[in-house]
Amino acid sequence: MTEEMLVEILSQYNVHSPTISFIRHNENRTYKVTDADGQSFLLRIHQPFKEGMTGLQHTYYGLLEELNMLDAQKKHGRMPAYQTPLRNYEGQWITTITDEGSPIHCSLLTWLDGRDLRKEDMEERDLVRQLGSQIAELHDFFRDYESHGMKHRPSQDIEYNESLIAAIKTGAELGLFQESDVTTIEQCIQLINARLKQIGKTRETWGMIHGDLGMGNVIMTTTGTLSFIDYGFFGSGYYSTDVAMGALMVPPALRNVFLEGVYGCSRPQDEERILLEGMMLISIIGFYAFHMGNEKMYEWMQERLPKLCTEYCLPYLSGESIFYRV
Image (cartoon, rainbow, N blue to C red):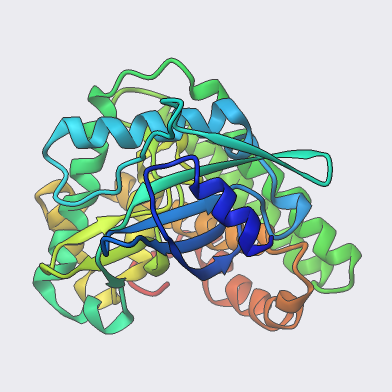
């Protein structure tokens, strides 16, 4: 996308003489924009790096639901830091342009000063506890948030987990994975799904989730507060999905501290621990599935998947606890 096109998009907003800096192109194209007054913004062009990455979150109504939710975070008032969507001159959250005959949706958010969370940050007990409490606060917000458009957002449910099996099988067809490892992954997901069916979808287990928590989607603000960004996979799901993703960011020795932040107690009941272990595996397998169309990741996946199966999936299938090992 040319700078002229970016400037044309920004002309639809109250942004004057912008300086535009490219950030990254993955699920979306993202840019930092600074105007003549020194104010900064995040410009998102909702066009994935690979066509296969396109999902409900890139549709007009899917994106609109995300932006409505982000606006509600501001009104909620209890989230410590957040990015707020900005309306264009027509009063809309979304600006749509046409590129080579195809519509592309764009959005502009306020800029959040800070940096990505780092591995070494999670060696600090207070930050680990804060991460857990922030996830709990986010879920409390989601429970109170009334949405009427979740059908336009991704859903990480049992059917989603089953789709991961198909993606891993594609890896075997490409010669990346051994059939025995694919079988192990399939058995794992089937066991996890059976356990999810047992707990059901209640107010305590199922609702709206971030869906993509990781180091790159948590900002350490300039005030030392953690803030979640990039709600591209925001949608329906099991709350344990976000908790499991959070746990994976934390060293095993501090995971009890993390759980204190989430639940107020450090050691989960066996049933909760087993569920979290399963969702940790789903999160990791989901990462492989997401990158199945990215040839640059093939060598890495080919090397790491057998280790995942041997060290974590097979023990999980045999009933061993892996919560403090993954």
